Length: 217
Figure 1: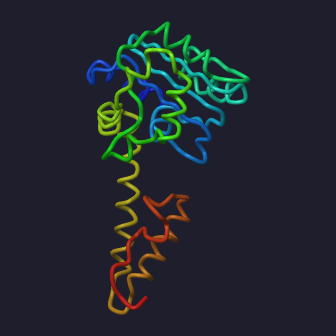
Figure 2 (figure 1 turned 90 degrees about the horizontal axis):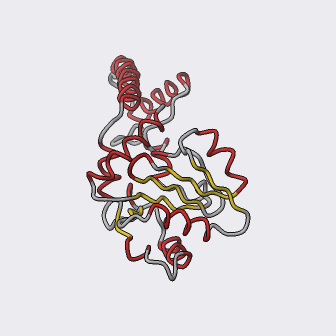
């Protein structure tokens, strides 16, 4: 449900951010995650892959043949094109059919959550689309990603409320542990035990969540 809602939200934001299409271009996403994929696709890819969101509900996924099944299972993309040798011809065909005048890519000078496209992949994409007009239409998708991340869908709100509720429970338990002689490190260990007991992930790096600010330990 979460990815369905975010994908629909992304489509609605295209017009608001003056984009005709949003193109997420990635490969080996387990090694090099892209925030865009994590936000609206939720499926890892291996070979060169392009996820295109266009206006009027146009969604196309171009992936290596071994990634087709996972993308199909997600149910997010009505059109899925698999390939064996090169994504190039398929990508050019799709872009010619959609003919977007502005194509948002995941790069940003100051927002790491919108900067998923590496410089190497950008050059690779430009090389794939050489002798076409499309590289000249590339712009940053950072405004779209900023709005997409900040505007929470009902599914996200539900998750946030659940996270707040369990956090408040743990904070109440922590308050009962605070007394003279108990170090911050001991409190952190108590919190970690609550994480384990409830099968929760930490909000950031495990060793620094919660932060231990003072004390010899």
